[in-house]
Image (tube, rainbow, N blue to C red; front, side, top):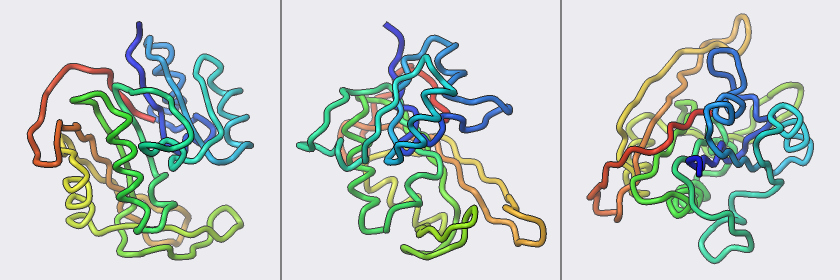
Length: 195
């Protein structure tokens, strides 16, 4: 059986770019079993069209919380690229706990956030206003550690979303889950995830 990857909480179109190709598609071609979730029915439809070898569900991450109404099993890796920033800060710890419970012991968690000290802040995005949250880098590291993850790799990039707009700092973390929140970790070789 292929390693199972929950390819993004908030998988959108399934076309997260890495090397200019949809990452979910790269994972499927590489032999991974890929599952994606998104709250938007339109995004789920588009993801299914872009990556027919993956399974996509229209649902909220809250549906997968311990004791929640949905069960998808456990995964070797979970990716959440720029999706947690769509939650108010008060909901992010529960989302991280949910992700932790979706992972096998030693599982990988890849995430990205925009570095910003904002909570449920309204910004224009693609002609609409959306609400976003963010953390300063040290605060993000603390939230991740509190959720029981160890950061094993960190990178960041400055990215200008439009001409004439100051660049934002995008933080990418690769984390490994431990057995407990005390920080004891089990290192194992599991599937690689990127969305």
